[in-house]
Image (cartoon, rainbow, N blue to C red; front, side):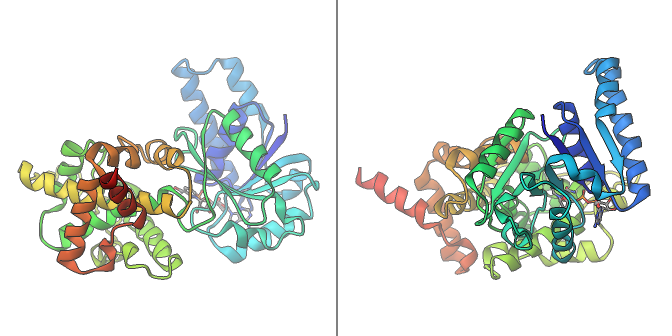
Length: 384
Ligand SMILES: NC(=O)c1ccc[n+]([C@@H]2O[C@H](COP(=O)([O-])OP(=O)(O)OC[C@H]3O[C@@H](n4cnc5c(N)ncnc54)[C@H](O)[C@@H]3O)[C@@H](O)[C@H]2O)c1
């Protein structure tokens, strides 16, 4: 079994280290910051002891797993690794420097992966001499609990690197979805309208936060409504992802960020972590009540779901991933109740298209343009 290197012992790095160690690998967890290493060690030990308390791990397994994780502040520890996964700060110049350094340390067969959410894998790999070993391995937070891992081959990546990475991640009992090296990969691209369209509906004064959340949970069956979810993710983080996807798509209006979210982030209304976001989480403050009007709720749900489906169709149309992987990614990465492409079939493609055409005609905005593949499918169905 190969040894795994994880660079960056923050939220993601420590979670990835736990997954790899639980799968039986020796893991070298490295961070430049000594206090980050100590924090990761304490966190991991407490998470694993809770698993023992819940009888999900035996005391013997606890010892084996904790013994497999080697903490260090020196990247020379990666010398014997077969794969190094980088999970450091999301800055391309820092990643470039680190990958250049890594290549000087690891063996020539060692695969080099990045857990980046928004940067191009091709760019990260561009600093490598043996660039066919670069790959994106994108875990979701919290890594030990979320089943999805997006695997992103760059234009430089060899088939062997891709196949080995896929096999490895599957052996860690994760759902591996292969996707193209395009902004937001699958989940962070396809999910944008869940937030963006909800914000737009609010900005138009159609409904308040609580009512939109109620519509999406009670009528749509989503586990969390968009505003509750944005408050959970953090408005600063969610806004930054939207802005980076928007810029990366050359400012396609489909991904336009919202002033409402920007203002909330600017005001420090970041969500749960700051005690206030779209909702006030202070003890004793009552949550606003939704207007439980089913006709309005249905309108809200219809508008958001057709926008999500349009985005899923766009990912399929541009071969970002297979139909199966696009649906798996949304159910396994962000807990959607159904895969969007299957959901579209259930709702009827003609109905989805007509809703989008209505929005497009009403607003005249490019944001609502129906995807060509969706249009083609409806046309074919009508001819058949
Ligand atoms: N947090 C998420 O929900 C999430 C989800 C998926 C992917 N990601 C991606 O994972 C990566 C890490 O995110 P995070 O949330 O774990 O960040 P984090 O801030 O929690 O942790 C980053 C760690 O990297 C360390 N670090 C910074 N520069 C370093 C260097 N040069 N060498 C070694 N260590 C260094 C820091 O000390 C810190 O401990 C980013 O690329 C991010 O986009 C984050």
